Image 1 (cartoon, rainbow, N blue to C red):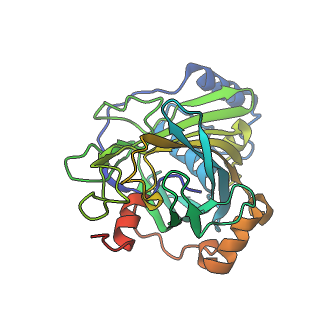
Image 2 (cartoon, rainbow, N blue to C red):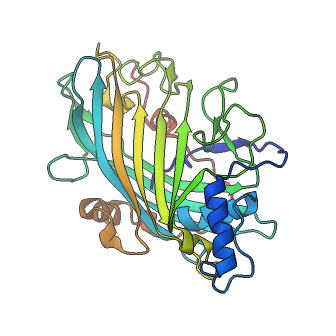
Image 3 (cartoon, helix red, strand yellow):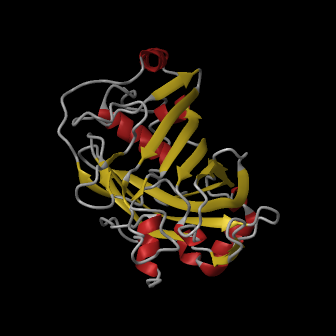
Length: 334
């Protein structure tokens, strides 16, 4: 699933001990430990005041600690939001993710995976190759997203990711629920607990120099600066997170996205001042292909079957963001 690990880690800051873990869920975890209800077979109960245990829980939820990666997917609709007009549905947005993690001896998490993102027809759900732009009247070629280098290591410090020019501000992995302006942020996530339901908000808020520059791609570029953001709200099980005998915890997640127009829409020469908004749902399939939208799964199986096969290395990757991928793949317009 497209979770913006299409980024490269540029700094892991040292951190003084601190805790942002909500008192409510810390109390629940202590109660569960005392009762023995959520930690069957575990050698140690989870303590979410510790970055190490946050890493463990995040790895189980977002991916799996099993010996094979887990398949996940997302799907939904993207809208045009233009001042003075009601939102306009443009196309579907759907994709797959194949993710796996392992816990290193120091407690850090090594992760790997592959992800796809496709634009789909609103009526049929079929993956689009071309799209009629209602604002310009053009038939444009759709630029779907493929990333087979989801790689990296998460440590006890919250990572920051860099795009654009060296002077552009790096993005904290999770902005909402943490002090994004602080130089030192521990890997402690803003979990919320309601009985056995655990919720996690996760926000990427980017802002950097546009790789699709106006001088090279005047029709595709929306300007010098872009500010895409992605926002997730995961729901998982406290019992599954706390069970150290289980390598994975199921989740569903609400997924929304805001950004300038995609470069492939060729809106750079238009006078339409607006943004894209997407609302999606993400699901961890636990190996069931039927959990992926059928048209998307069949398209991946036919055209990109390697994205359903396990990665073969744990090396660091240097994946590209969507705008970087477009700039790398597309010839100059001028």
